[in-house]
Image 1: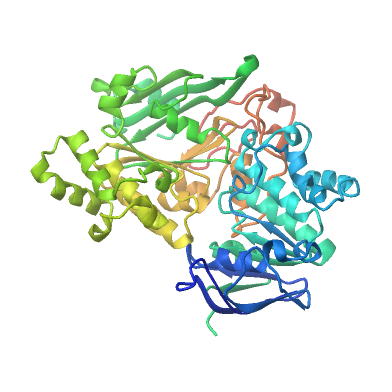
Image 2: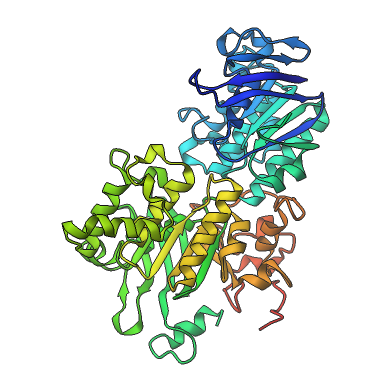
Length: 217
Length: 335
């Protein structure tokens, strides 16, 4: 599903955060990527999600090499990947209601009416309903907002889901609930998962295999 | 000794139990919202905290933990209304922080009698000044140290929180999360406040840093500080706490010693049991449903809609008796 080879990426060319790193996620596989804060694992996740252009190295997504990142990536390529970020507050437009937030990818791709039922079903699956869907991000808790962000990431049925510290700010029960939603989705759609985090116990329980970062050759 | 009511009756003429540093009695906080709505963030919370003891307050986000901490420091916003009492200090010389004026709080309580270790230390520190400048200012204000001795005093204060001296001239954005945490802890420790409140000290830190932060907090408790740790991280709570208070929808639903809570026989309240079972090293099974909204709490037990043991009796609000607030809780084995 995803092949990263010899990726070097970062924010200043002289001091890249990620150096010469390779990693493969097979179709339907759940890979955990484990490392301490500041080691570059979020940067690598952004490269994998086509959100950050690496200085060197190649990304192969669904069998085809990636040529453009961010806005240069064609929509069909970008929507293959769903991303859930660590901080839902920074990843959610505070002006949208949770219902609009979940349906936002459908609106952006012109499939709003087609996917309206799916948005409702996903809101239900992540445990949001009724009054909560009419609220805006400042009126809900971190846990509730992250539930909405997960539903949003699953709306377009991505074949690869990237969870960048999805549960770092959440309590144990919400963590278990969100992981259960991800696993249900993966069973249903045979999707691959790249879960980035620093919680060894969680990733061992969640993923098929766990790799340390930076990976030794 | 776990029973806050018993401690309440004997407050003022203590016999065996150590003098509490902090006694919170029936503390409630309500926020008045536009349109006449009320948000009941904290409801009838009572507990004691002694010197050298660590109490961990655990619960889901939005259950009222941080509002409780803000109330103890007199930092609630203007639309908050409090009831009950929070006595600080020994019986002879105690002060109710809920009714104390802003001048008293500013001059004698914050920093001097209660130190706060904040939730996001990087945001708590002033971004435009170095750690040394902030430490020196705090030392001068709180201890009245003269200019000549200031530099050495600030370095000593940094050393107490294990903040490396060669990083003192850095700005907060140049520090890692762990070092920013230590800088904030150093500021909280400057005046040797007997009571420390740590609000989510481990959020966003990786496992190694959590272990180190928790170890340092534990050391402060062992040195005789009373420590109130507010967290949703049960693994951290297990490592640091002597006692655990589980909060749900603004109430303490279980208040007990940490060892039986995490070991055998385990938690007695169904919510606390569900929270522990949700850990990845245990069953990894979520509690069904969502916590109730604090502006629309049910009359009875707030956990009943999510509880597998709920019966008609749960329509009546259970009291916190014998350390647990549940009509169906098993009797304490060790009581």
